[in-house]
Amino acid sequence: MTFPCRVAAGVLAVSAGFAIQAQTADGVPPKAAVCEACHGPQGKSTQPTTNPILAGQTSRYMYLELRDFQEGRRSNELMSPMAAGLTREEMHELSDYFARQTPPVQSFAADPAKARLGKLKADETLCTMCHLGGFVGQNEIPRVAGQNYDYIVKQLSDFKARKRTNDAGNMTSVANTLTAQDIENLANYLVGL
Image (cartoon, rainbow, N blue to C red; front, side, top):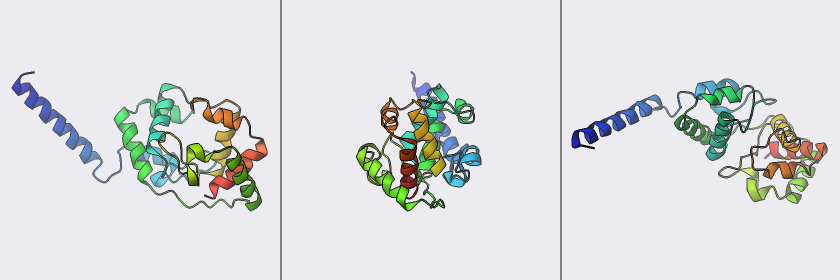
């Protein structure tokens, strides 16, 4: 590459950086509003029966899930088409943005007896080995603390029924050992964390 070409390439790279920075000067990625239509303002879901809380979720996990929706390893009638047109950069921007948000306080009233049994089951199945203490998640392992009750039940049930298999089989093997009552108890425990 000749000197003038290097200068031109550098100017283009810098101006592209300014364009991206200008779009996100307030820290909100341009496409976040599309996500928030279903996942709620700042990822604090207002539709707990169908949409997970994104606020405070691990960035790496969200990025991988978006990529899985895009590449067909995970399927959902709404999310698959939403992820289809995202660039890798947009997926990283969105994931980082929602990861920085504070999760909401849950309004779901967990049943204390079921939550106690859920904690015992979580201890028995060694859930914290992957999800960490407090179930805050790490890297590609999701935060499940304070997640919506119905969403937890659906995901655990889908793993058990092998409707969801985009996790290399880890959750499928764990969920396979759970009864429907175990799933309900775990959801009561996790929603209250």
